[in-house]
Length: 183
Image (cartoon, rainbow, N blue to C red; front, side, top):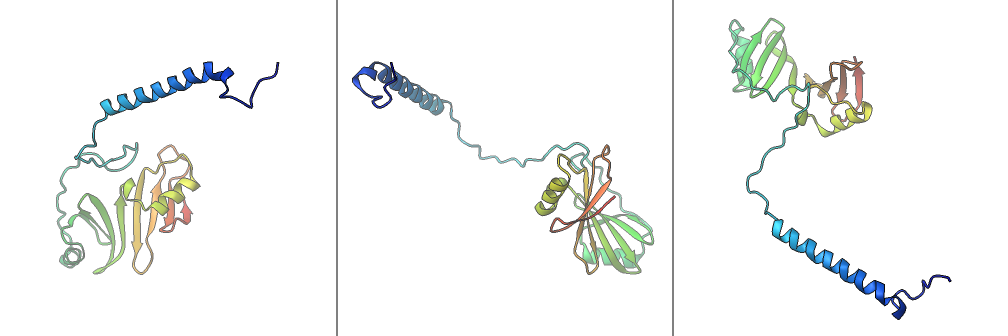
């Protein structure tokens, strides 16, 4: 005998749809009551989510830096004028390493002029376009370190270091996400 699909709510099917519908309504009511009883409101305390990425710089307890001695007064004055509050931690004729907040910044110096700035970045500080381009170009790879390089008169570039076990060492990208080099 063929199934009667044309009349599911007929008198003949009443013995099945009434208990099924009643059971579904009962289950829905029980779910609403359980949800209402177990709900706790959102907290007023907000925490910053810091990703724990292996092989990434940052996140560890650091020792306060000691100021470097023997840096020429003209370079120290220029750094103090351009980057107030920065601490000089290393100084040579061509390079000066400073600590600004938690960031280590390396400056390439020629005479009294700063030619290039290389700032170490944590992973959340990498621009979204750069991180997206890296993820598309190298799937399933999380960079272990990042450096933002800015040369005088040029746009910044970002160097993202691969994990230690990777084939490549460093990928260089522009701010728009274009890959311009690979070592």
